[in-house]
Length: 324
Image (cartoon, rainbow, N blue to C red; front, side, top):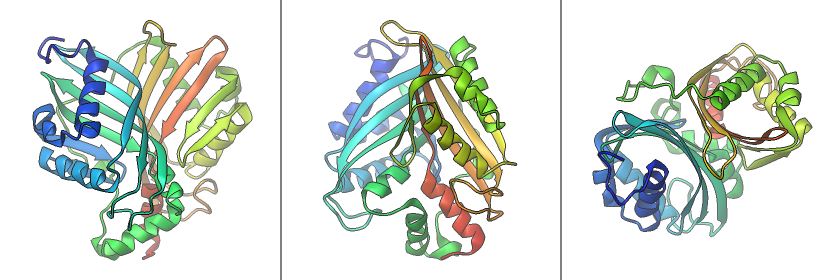
């Protein structure tokens, strides 16, 4: 781990360690050390520029959810300490809604939800990040649905003219990380599977997934078996039949004591011109940032984790339709 604090034995230990230090030990000011001053953090809801903005957002989240735990399920990574490393870090969070903030008055409700963050690190510091959390799962557990909460956001942020606009490719800024991952066979296989699904080749699921496989999907959804996994993907894809699916980053890994894994960061850009997960077609232009993880076993893909932000998608639809 050349250039990194020697207390971290490897890159996963670094990612898990600083996450615990910042959030659970509440050493938020450590972000001044672990994040670069001009870091870019892209999420479906926004583009955040600069460490100060990240620190303010972290304080705000901890104010609403002071007991939040961030349980690291996996760190899928590529690169080297000398040239920089990219981690795709999957987190299972538990939290209680105890403070007022972006989700309204405290409800005391307990939450469980996943987050996947792609982070580029070099010389003991993160300087580029892509972050997707199951925002729809959070609002569902707080008593809303994603479509309703997106409209609630628009109204609270000053209507269509004044509200915060969800992230899209046009607002992106090129950061220091320009890599695309590695050439490991498991990343390549998972990329081919996702591309085939988005091309409408549903037989790919029956050919490559374990029939006892599980899919962990947005809005706190668990799909069990081929039929439920297929139903999730068909409903999602059918909402955007003409949209462009792009893979931006892929990693495959094989590590001791772990199954072969893969991490894919992807986007969908185009028109809401089909009937599916997001209702009847509206003609809205949408941009969807997604991250997917896969674990492979002896009978195929046995665990899949896919995250995108339903609220950010509905917000784009509402804005296009003039709803406020």
